[in-house]
Structure formats: structure tokens, C-alpha cells
Amino acid sequence: MTIPHTRDRVLLGVAAGGLTALLAACGGGGSDSSGTGATTAPAPSKPATSGTQVTAKLTDFHIQLSAQNFQPGRYTFTAQNMGHHEHALELDGPGGENRSKTLEPGQSATLTVTLKPGSYQVYCPVDGHKDLGMKTHLAVGGTPAPTSSDTSTSNGY
Ligand SMILES: [Cu+2]
Image 1 (cartoon, protein in one colour):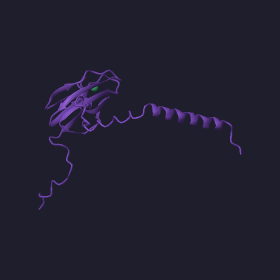
Image 2 (cartoon, rainbow, N blue to C red):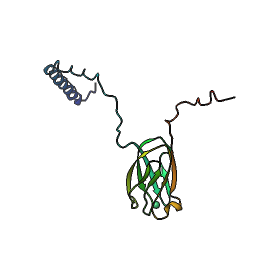
Image 3 (spheres, rainbow, N blue to C red):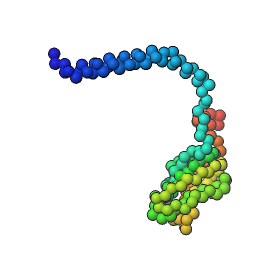
Image 4 (tube, rainbow, N blue to C red):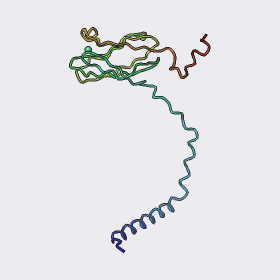
């Protein structure tokens, strides 16, 4: 029998808490049945504002995109200048030209672009950086990503 005395206090505390809870429950009895009006919960809607997030890392002298496959739609490119020179991000393609501001080393900026089906040039428009290697391209598909691979079922022999 070595029950410490503190246990008595713990038990007392639990008892007191239980009493309080009981009293509270009695005081507010019957008022907890109002949560049935949620049958018309709205479908989770898209943000519809900024689009898909893509990161473009700008270094000396290279551009790395966080995504390779694009579908038509709205994208927000976050250009991060991780190099030691000024850089910027420009996308030229079917949707026109889109250019971020020129970024100092360490800065970043966002560029929201609505991509259309086709091919886009992605490059740094600062001083000749494009020729130094700061260029890539991205292709925007004209159809949603395929969910099945049955394109050859009737196309064989
Ligand atoms: Cu550059």
C-alpha cells in the first residue's frame, strides 16, 4: 500500500471536474441539437484566382521549372533568383509575352500566365543570359491528361 498522497488530490480534481461538467451539461441541456442544417454543403470550389503554382529557379545561368507537363489554364510562376546576377523570367508563346520584373539576387516574383495549347519559350531576358543557357521551353497539351491508355485498342494490326 504505497499510494502517494497526491493521488487523493488528483481524484478530488477529477471529481470536481466531473461535477462541473455535469452542472454545465444540465444548464445547457437541449441546446446542442442545432447542427442539422448542413445538408446543402457547397462543393469544394477551386480558388479560381491564382491557378496552378509553378516554381522557376533562376541560377547562373540556368532555369529550372518545377513542372514539365502543362495543360491549358492559369498558372502562377514564382521566379526565384538563386544566382548572383540579375535575372528575370519571360514566357513567350501562344498567349503572348509574359515577363516578370528583373530580380536582384535573392529576390523572387510571381508571374501569372494563362497558358494556351502550344509551345512556350521560357528564358531570362536579361543581357544575353538566354544565350548563356537560361532558356528552356514548355509544352502545353491541348487535351486533359490521359487517364487511360487505350489509344491502340483499335489501331493495331
Ligand atoms: Cu538571367
